[in-house]
Length: 378
View 1 (spheres, rainbow, N blue to C red):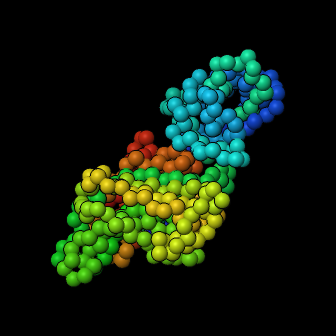
View 2: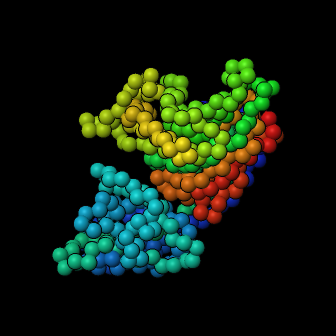
View 3: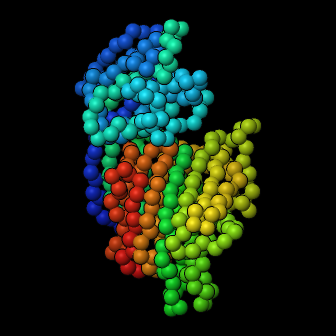
């Protein structure tokens, strides 16, 4: 429940650089189907009159592809939307961005493991009245996987960078509540498990999760609470949620942190500090549910920080406090952000809790949504 501050300890950083491709799509005026190629890029102009077969890349692409576009990616209007390889966009893009009045959108295209050319067009079979075109620039970018130490965090963070300054607007994740970490002799302590936005370095942090209390009072044993929190220069305490039943080891928790845009006359928020709001021009909402016990809690629309730093990353974290509780393992699943799965980055940060590797995450699953954090020692 803290931002990740720059560590005083210095450890070697291990970076693995993976190349994927990025698509930048924007509207253009009337033009004929054309290509322009550079060493690491190609530009296509796709006439709307061509319908779903507007223009095809010369190069082949594989894996996850990131991009920014203008119309016609969204919103859908009478079936008029972006087509990729003659299919509706949601066959390739799992996290379709919401409507934006700027008509500029960022998204991730999942191409698959087999290299292939990509055809872009519009899903409109009635092309006789179509005019104009849109331009697609395809270029390679760098995605970095970095291992980092932290005094308090173990888990994964998807982070932006200067070549690709995307903004994360949503983080989703599920985890299994770990086995009983308390005994009658365990010192009073706590452990947090959460997902959220921001929080690295000195960035604002929006997060939702659970806290495991051990012997909060002498002999109390294990108590588990659900909470959400918005941290900024103003630091209200976490807001604990009243749940209809107790959270127990083995329960499956699902949590979502979501940014809903800037405050406006039609996009309002509650700035009550008793509900955990530090105030600000951004609108956030949290939800948390226990599928084992069949309950869900949803927060008010809360006012928080609206700076780009507050949405510079999406996070899935086990956080320790003092002497680390022996939680054995925490299994995360279904971890996604508004930019796609964890491994879409563009920077993927893997945090191990130091000193002496107190807790560490496994490798990501092949689909980039599943990992486990293991306890090692206190």
